[in-house]
Length: 316
Figure 1 (tube, rainbow, N blue to C red):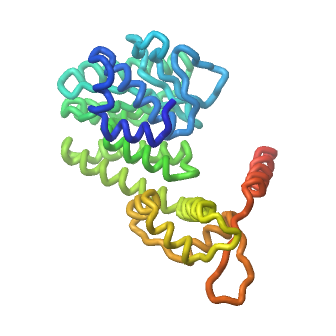
Figure 2: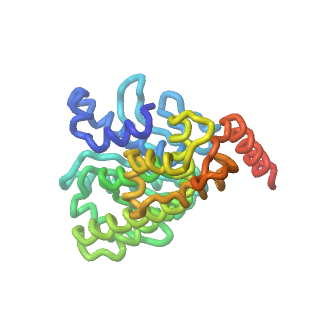
Figure 3: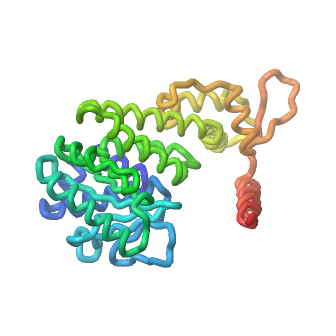
């Protein structure tokens, strides 16, 4: 499977990405791309109908086939994500007109009911995601009229919104399944509280942007620590002044993207706190005014991390 950044690039340039395939194959590769995006968002292993393994409890299965180059068969959802404490039924469609509602919406409800009945799963534990290039007004109205507390929540997501979610997942280190569940509830509330498709589009854009900002703010310490450590490794010396790290970070395109999303600047104090608290570097005693840091060897950091994981896994 392609890297998460490659998948994000393909989503941003969707038309160009799909033109490399034969016209009859484009829906297949659109389905697969959307499934791969969610696999990366949730950090779930990616399976297809060719190699699905029900013994893996947390996974994403695209129900199309790579071997035969075919999309998910009729009667089945395009993809299923087996997440922690809930499930996603994912329906990817390039339809933008009336067929989006009459075919995709109606089929998604049947697919969800079949999945729940076959696996004895309460519908309230399942989200149905309809991923499209543009949401059709009748689809929006049908979803709004279908809201029931005891039933699965149907969540429409346009490709640009999926890009934002994937971007947050790429930049964050501890984005959890429950964090994403919270986002889906926010989008569902946007449907409930909106008065029109235009109103819904504004509400959901604000909800995803706010969620993205809040999630990345929580990740700030870890993110700056990792990027500061990366800069130290690129500099390559054993003792590195904190102002040099700051200068490198201020020019880093991904760091600039991250800071732009959360609406903050980076400071020497932030770098110091991130390096020390995340155990990426040690402060070197010195008589000069500027603080010097020495990067921790990767083997030490890995050993500490594995001990932490081991300690957590032993807790019952």
